[in-house]
Amino acid sequence: MYMRDRKILVVGSINMDMVVKTDHIPKPGETVLGGEFFMNPGGKGANQAVAVARLGGHATFIGKIGDDIFGKQSAQLFDQEGVDITGVFSDPGAPSGIAMITVDQAGENSIVVAPGANANLQPENVAEALDKHSDGTILLIQLEIPMETVEFAARYARERGLMVVLNPAPANNLIPELFHLIDVITPNENEAEMLSGIEIKDIASAREAAENIIRQGVKSVIITLGKRGAVVMDNGAFHHIPAPEVETVDTTAAGDVFNGALVTALAEGKTLVEAVSFACRAAAIAVTRFGAQSSIPYRNEVLLHAVK
Picture 1 (cartoon, rainbow, N blue to C red):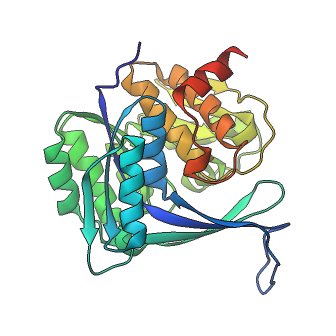
Picture 2 (spheres, rainbow, N blue to C red):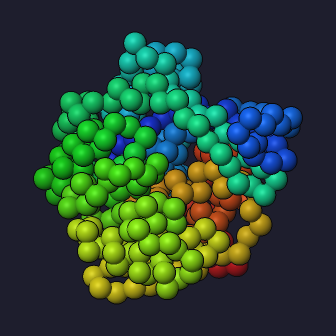
């Protein structure tokens, strides 16, 4: 039994991903002949909202799209996934966001994002949406929208008693200013190194980085480590949660799946360690599939994966 009625509010970006598969990611000045091309709905915020919905959570997305074909397609796809889009605004003066993604044979990717309407998501938009959904319990936010809007959303939600979870991607030097507003922060290795100033080589150095971030004012830290799983620093206790062993096809959106799964489990009343374990399993399934939202698993798949 799970509690779908506990509403998760996801504030963030929505893009259309344009993906090319190739042997290797080109170096500066290099032209590479690619292979398969396809378009896939994406954007970190949108991916995380869809992950919440597919994994059994009640997802409400707050963001901004352009008044164009990509925006209309995105809204339609959200509706099909069961994501509440009453917090989505349309911007007639800007195109919808897009991302250009190159994926190599090892499943690693290189991404360039043109934010479009995402860059115009304003604090007043977030206030209007949060007031409309005052029954929310968790706010999940990332950094593909203006930092002013991120800071406002975190503060506004915190004042109203919501748990605030920040996925600090893409990382920037302004994040520490938000630390006192954050309940849980979920950097990957590179982001954790930027935030802590500590190079992560192994689990011991990951713990050191997490402890450094905690000292800066965040309540709890989760550092995702790819194939090595994730580490958790919470209430003075440190935990390493290993990831299932899988064959990686494409890492696009793996972090988004992790974050969506994390807040879904937290909304169900799971402990942070239990939620991270669930998130690791969900992300492990995602990397075995190609694409962003097309790689997001459903709840029954993650539960089945846990008993194999």
